[in-house]
Length: 394
Image 1 (tube, rainbow, N blue to C red):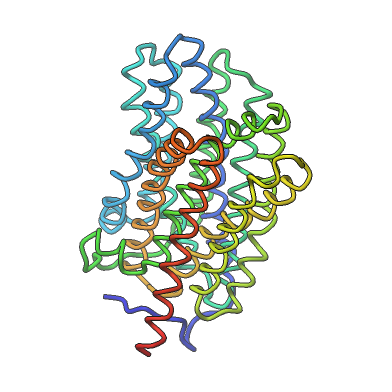
Image 2 (image 1 turned 60 degrees about the vertical axis):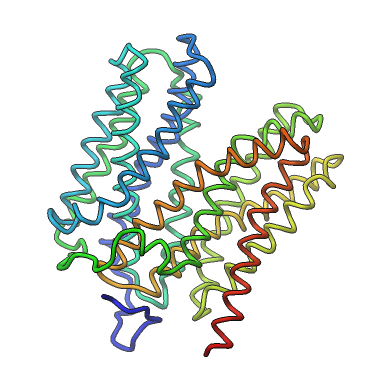
């Protein structure tokens, strides 16, 4: 099994851009399609008279599909190759995206959701593995910062396309499927440069969840806070007497923070051999920011400024966590750990909205901030204890 590492003198320090551009651009095209598809599908179901509960249940298939796809992705890549597996995933996700237009019965949307998000999960896992494997250790954080920035812009472009295209007719579905199919082009061009998995991972899939716990726990917290925060923040803001437009602008500020802080945080992580203190520090800042939310409800500008920096801290857990994973493992173990990383993210997206929603019901509107603070605080506490234990043992 590949042992944890922090880089060796023999590691190549040049960034191999063709390979990285293929992986980053392909997954960013998928990000555009997902950003377009999520509001598009919800609006169409709403027009068909489907209840909010059933729409939410159908949307939750994304997390179920991700958790199902993550354990088998590395096995598929080992058997068929990274690039061929990605191209098949592109085809499946594009066909299922177009299938939503033709599926008139609501029950058909459940297998379509499963196929679409299962295939896109495979693309995320293998793209991130490709990026991690092709990045020189001293510049891995910088490259992952570029990846996270471009991906965030892709997700932001999706809703913008939706606002232009609307929800009528087949055209939005053709655009979404076309964006996904475009992802196959850079993958095909760089297919000979994709990483090769010459051996199967030596451990059971669930062992990889705990092999680099600081990284997998960080992405679980990110998934919980991102999914729960984005879905329930409008309720928190409106109940706090902000208008819907003001609440939407506050969410936009979080998105801006997500974009602008990725590369700086990646560069900072490159200067630090051990990424764990940085991850713990970001979680602590997230905890403080969450606890401040109820105190700034009377000042929109201060709330916007807080969310700008808070959004950067939240998204930084993903970027730096992924960089930490790449600094510790190589080869098939890195691919399997990448799958475990995405699996933990999917678990977070399922757990976060449930926990935060329940906290609002139990503790009132401020339960939103307190639940998010609890996620951050628990991670900061456990990672701090782990750091102290490791240093004492050393």
